[in-house]
Image 1 (tube, protein in one colour):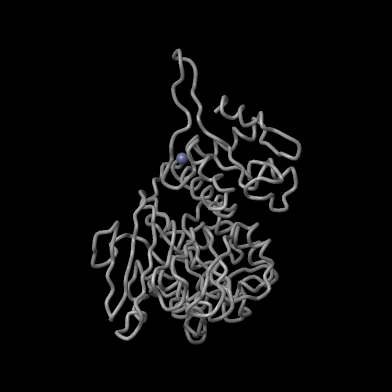
Image 2: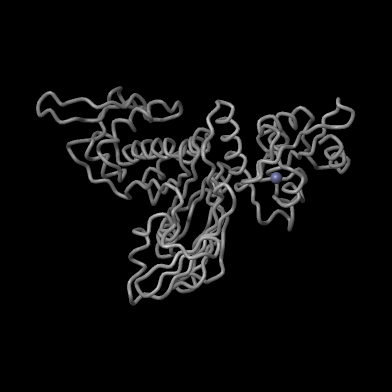
Length: 405
Ligand SMILES: [Zn+2]
């Protein structure tokens, strides 16, 4: 590292914010001296000459650019933020070069943030002697289809936001993506009359695998790495709470419907949610009504009296509780199996501070899953959303010429 980093340092010029040696070491140590690029994990330290030297080959690459004309812009960061460890990702030489190719256009800051979060979560878990399965949705692209201009693609980050007016294909994208792992989600695109749909997705499992599905004439043909496969037998789990919750006197029943999970798992999920230190809703517990014996969920929430019941919360607060439990389910699942949390137009997103509060939760290293959220255009401050680590994928236009960019 030293030789290469010094070469990089020699490029130092006015307006650049390079990392100090101690920040560089901090970035390397947090990465376990391994490349953070998904699927690489190359060790960046090794045995040097003479039995006493250590050879180093890693780079502390900038997420937002060190130079004002650098590949990824400076994202409005202060000089302190630009040269803090938060703005660095540890990469091997090959991947440091790759992410800066073509002015860094293929690897925007939010993608690098998510690579870093994924890698750090793995390092943290290995440090605790837990060895999670590594799985990651990498890239999605559309071929022939009735809605979108074909040939478009995007790379997944840890947090992904589909953002566009109603009728711009957000739900279709979610169904096509999740349909790889659950053909039911794809099923209504597979009617005999509908136009053929071809979509492709690559996943790291942990090596890169190419999945494709062609749906036409009521049938779906899947392929993995070019070989036909009746279905995709990869263990990716999708957690997707319902878009709207129908309240119900029995809160276990209510939450079971809201989360799309069996009643038998709700109690366990509540305990898992209570173990997460950053949850806004705390101390969740079920208590029986003295009168009718029905179980209600009580919890503590900021600006509410302790022990408030689920049914007395506002719609946004209630959706927040569902979101905490969905996150708990995804967190549990992600510990054992690659997991995608899908949040389709969840109303709590419009509660003040959603992105400031929940982005940190979702990026927390213990949350080893990817999130795919969709929202209609509602004048969000997208700069703030991106700063909170979200990749924003805009959907726009009219079918069959829809675009995602
Ligand atoms: Zn690498």
